[in-house]
Image (cartoon, rainbow over all chains, first blue to last red; front, side):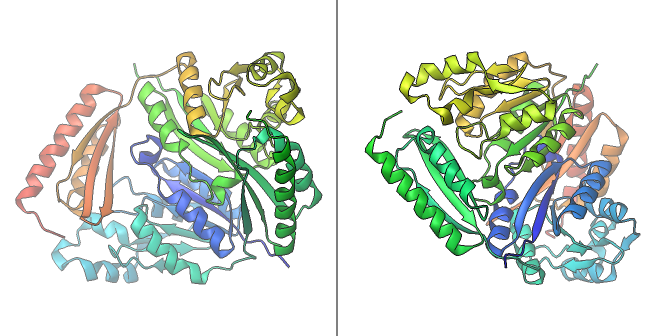
Length: 248
Length: 248
């Protein structure tokens, strides 16, 4: 039985919306979750504005099994994720002794100033997510996992979170190259194959480079036999179309 | 007077959410809009599911000056953006004679099959956005601009849309390298500078590579003098901190 475990990802940060920083977390998280059997269903990017963060968190955490967030947990004034999360959950927030202890591993007593202590502000009732790189922890509250925005740190946090997650049946996918056959030739046949079995979804992905267009077809689903049968049908469709192939 | 023109971006496509395709449009659109004086305020990524697309379109188009979408306007069964857009606006949809004429430039009469004719399905009342690369057009309906997902095509569409857009005061930004001074040292001073003038926003962006941490501070705003004054205050703050610099 194919159980579905779902997730959303919320990217927090003005720098992504201005284009100053190019996001590197969406693709990584998408591939990672797909690989362990969690369906990423939605991504949002919002600015460093409390009301926007709170609204997105409350919309997404109620809708999906898990919500993952990145960004906004550093020591500066624009790092408002922890406080926003406390507000979204309607809980208090303060310096968490476990988080303070983690920061004390990194900073000498005189160095742990008020700004750095902001990184120990954790909503009441949250569990910490360790950060072996720079110590300042992420946290889990309810079904929400709050991670750093720096990709290297986000990635180690995700590794430590993963074993604690409920996962569903893994998505199985078969990639088939259309080998020069244009989308417009196989589209009708592909639609028929996709419509014939609701356990599979089929996507057609054109890409474009200096060497011209390239079309790739991906058959996906959680039932291995159904995916295999649909992929075989696609391969036969393409073989038939090769006969009357047309460069356009 | 700093006028604010806002936008959201909606990325449509299962392939981004599974991680199969790594998005290349968000960063491009973000930087482009910022450069012409439009504030990108939110991004969402949704799957090829009509109800999800309709809900996102209706939420975002009512909230911002403009909504830009990418993806789902090709000839295959999973290309459902045009139909979803008609549903979101509550209008009819059919083969648009202008769009058919564009496709006829590319395809010989016998080649313009039913699947390819899907690319001429345009919601009633929409204006077309030309596609010099592969002809199949995007369209504008109300304040929503529907573009292709293939980056090269999306980019030429954006170029043709840009002159038609209302734009606001351009965001001015100053980048200041913290040159080894840790965030935790300048965070308090930075917060004070940010709080002193609501016309500027200040972000601190740590990044991490093989050569270690690097912190960059960005001062942004639409009032040139205010940005300049805040940037100068940041530079002076960093100069003061260099005196008692600490490697942690």
